[in-house]
Image (cartoon, rainbow, N blue to C red; front, side, top):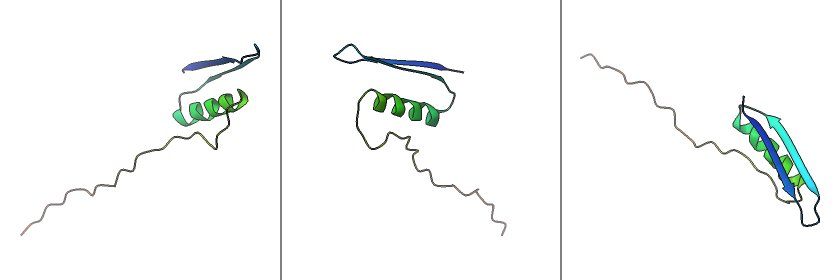
Length: 64
C-alpha cells in the first residue's frame, strides 16, 4: 500500500504535516484536501472527476 507524507513550512517557520496510507485515489485526494486546508489554503473542494464513458451495447448478430 502506498504511504504518503506531506509537509509544509510557513513563512514563520510553523510546520504542518500529514501522513497516511491509501491505495485509492479518492482517499488520497481527500487527505491532500485536508492537508492543504490545514496549511492555510482556502478553496471550496478538491475532488476526483471521472470522465464520462457511455455504456456500449454488446454487438448483436442478425440471422436472416
